[in-house]
Length: 454
Image 1 (cartoon, one colour):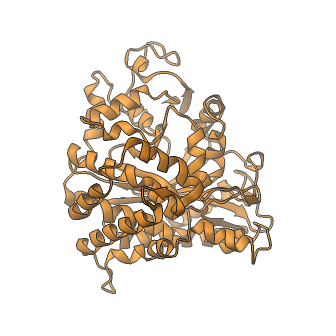
Image 2: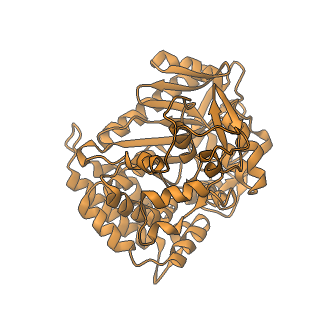
């Protein structure tokens, strides 16, 4: 999630401004960039406990020490809650998960270098403070009550609202980590095609990156418990949004969806005003109960677009949201998968051919079953594993055609090797963790904090 919003912005006087906001993301292919975001659990090495905000080894101290690398602090009511360096930022999830929202970069080699540099920086500071970080989809040991909350106004609003609309929303906020990539589109038609392909294939990514098989120290029966959590978080703003595949879908139809999505807040003068459950349509009419008589600014609309949580999210770019956090190679692989599929025309056509006859019930069944069964989920006359192999072949061809080489002459397809091994062996990161739990770890999750540390 981003640093605090600004209250500066033009007033919204016409609904067409809402559509134009999304449409303004269109850009020519030469201007397309890659923006990777990843979250990770931070914890004390000595007792494996998650970090509080305050204290000598807390989140505030971590952020303060990271400023030595050129990061500039962002404060909310006297608390450092984010760091900014150019177009990159480091932010906090509600339970103290540390997120890097990377800069928009030209290629996957730059992306890999950025991720490695970031992990080196937090590793250096972590070594001084006796803390470490790891990437899993779900907190493997600690209960919800064990997780400290971060002092961000946005999260206070969400914390109060979540239990009213689902049973797992607070777990989503405090005990999950993901890796995402943000990608561009050239036009409305290009956006629609990329949205449809990536939404259909999101369960395939979920299966490949599944990395959350433990809850409170024991196997939970899922490959990606993080993905399952989203099915009982808030039905008004989650799911696979089948209208994306309907005739006539475009920016305007997505605006309709967002206008039906209940609000969380309005940000004014450094304060988050609780508008949870209220209507943006009423806001447009000056009838928002939280701010009677006031009409929204375009920045309010930008904020509202971040409060819908479908598997693929449209802002001024498309955000891929289906993967558990994982190792550094897997963080790089997530971006490689989607860049290979969506940033090469032949690959995009091939991916569309793969999914275009999938029915709404089939897509829904994949979304429902993949969190539990992963690559072994049945699909038509095969399994998700076979679909994953076909998908990876398309992505690899796309990356080879992009022909973006590093200093060693390697193209971007090298970042898919880790996913090829997962699919070929039918062995997800979750399978690997479960195998260790049942053998070398002796039925304890404690070793995960060492084995999976960055």
